[in-house]
Length: 204
View 1 (cartoon, one colour):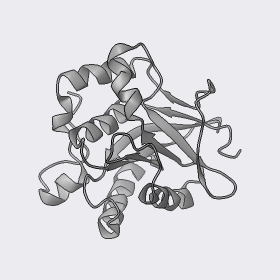
View 2 (cartoon, helix red, strand yellow; view 1 turned 135 degrees about the horizontal axis):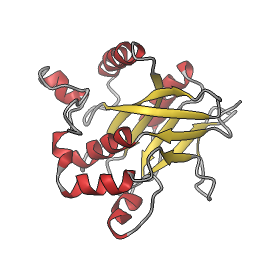
View 3 (cartoon, one colour; view 1 turned 90 degrees about the horizontal axis):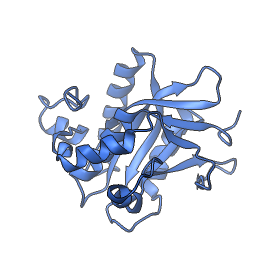
View 4 (tube, one colour; view 1 turned 60 degrees about the vertical axis):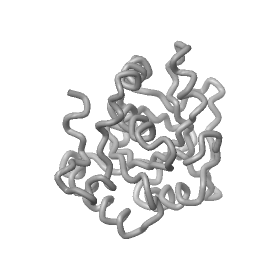
């Protein structure tokens, strides 16, 4: 089955962690890694967790390679693998998937051909507070047969969903309570290794 009809289901905590990371560094581009597995029936990619990566020098390869190794090692022992990539652009109104995001997506695609790239949609994020929209504040990109990352249009097909329908409500609650200040990413960890990139206390 190609990634043409696959659904992508993201767990609430993974989803919220990625968005909070972007909110913590509003004026910077940030990225993250999606962890999970293919569903038993093979018709969906289950994104079970996420790791915030960087908020500076996103394209720096040595740092990226170190972090991917550590992430693979930790989650591999839990039966999960890297299934995709998350990116938030520096500029609020920038809705393009840029070169760095495509390159890292390509890198992950080599190991997991059903990989997804998720791009933060700032307009949807901003509209959260005045609506009942349950759809994720992210845009889904998958790689087509011509090896290009293509936006999967959200014309009601809902290929990207949050596992828990309450995800946006909880996210909004965390946004208003300033929970994003507590997110630790790999940049923070490389600066001060006492900071845990697994964010074990974020949802306590």
